[in-house]
Image (cartoon, rainbow, N blue to C red):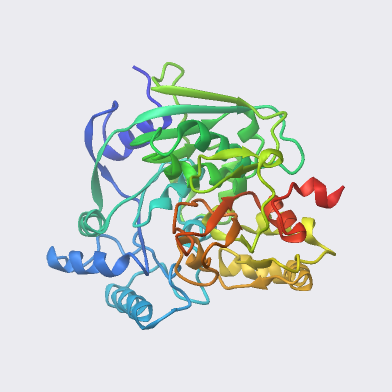
Length: 424
């Protein structure tokens, strides 16, 4: 029986010849990551379990990203607890404020994730790493604490959904727009405990920054993991970046007779920019069909669309223009390296001249904690991944999910807008 890409990765790390959906396996872990908001409980459980040392100090990266810079005393104490744990354990990949970033962009950027890996993250969007052709999923604090002790985890092998894209993308349409189609068609639960496997010529032609979006938003469909087929583009991204030698990378491909529980096929040749309307990532329509509501805040950033390429696109749209007088714009690069690139390339000057506020790398506004949360009855246009009720601030706030190009155009016009309206 043929295996899917996910099944091949899990079989390899479980030391098995083959696996099938429903099998319970024990898999070796390559990375077990926690953040400032998830590590305190994980550390507590780790010690309650009798844990003394993590299984490998090079495989437990700890990242300050959610409540940073510390927004209050409690968040400062969270960071302090993780900081002390990293020091006492001798954690090699410890990322402090000023040298850190949003974990799901930081770890690939720093070369810690490789094709064929099994990666656990104490955050739901840890699925992002699957953009590099690995198995990556989010787990709770108890499972993470056990992983820190044992260096392995138990898993039920998921069924897989085959998702293929064909056609050449029109100008100003990107991976975010494509993934919103998947969210529309699968809904919140259509991918529950399933692996979403992304391929097709359109994705083959895409750069890495767009590929990460598919794996990132897999969880918005309920997916256990999302994975993009690794190829030469993956290899080029990792060269000079990966901390492990190429001989350790595993470029798996699904078998021709692999069994999938569902298939989705898209031709994107005529796709236009898409919008996820309140209050679901799957409530998706073309921007041309979305109500042109006045927008209070535009937010560009997050683990979904805070990469340097996203910022370049947004800057291209807004260059030489001004943020609408009744709209505020917040730009948050995903990592300190991206922040540096934004400065050296002149993107920061473009945003500043337009009237945008530029913040440090943080997850803050994406989960409604700080640095750009929404007030009562406000309307926001975000490049993030979720727009549930109360997700980004007040429960009455209405948030729309879009690409960086749509976000920048919206900032200029003050209403939901197609970038072609601004540029043509």
